[in-house]
Image (spheres, rainbow, N blue to C red):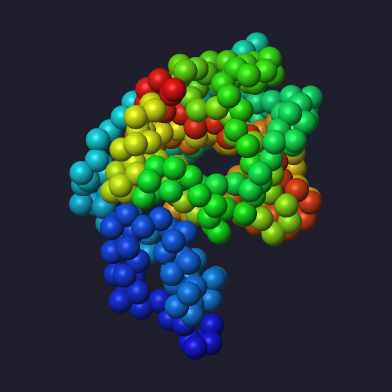
Length: 289
């Protein structure tokens, strides 16, 4: 059928809800729709609209609390009194924007230009095609939804890594050893990361193995190491938010339960010109080993 005749029907909405609540990742739902003949733009719009409506239904049913999910303590910067600047690791970090639900904070100047260049230089020789978690085994796999190159640093493996990690721990008031190693990603023109959640879905068989290393993820910090010539925003489809990639800036978001009701569905929009480099820090409930 043509794009013009592809209608978002109630049957399609029910199917999307059934797939996501059965544990399917949003990128897998999009891929299935594409394989069935749906245009990518129509499929993405249907998924975004349906999940937003379902989120509103869940909030109404449960008084804004995610059903059948355990709330966890989460990282949180000290924003009492609405400060414009926070001091972390001896550096002044600007608070550019905040959102309460989902919990999102945009920081300015978290990294210096020299630190950004230093992280890129350390990472570049070790970049490989990015992988995602294999939900069946708890391992990792190459996934068509993530078209970037990446690598992981070990915690504290270089003085620059140690300085950045200590700054993050102080800024977000979360123990340093409750964080995974920094991941650096490079997105070339056309590369993207389709909308997804960062928590590990309890419905997937591989999750139990993953959680042995430090429990659930409860927060994400994405730091921009450069500014691409075009595209590359971090998007939050459930709330219509886009964060532009600006060198040295960062976006933080937390999720107190492994459930779509957190509203933390997010993605990396396609880079349209140049390259985008980011460093990501995932924060766990407990000590990550």
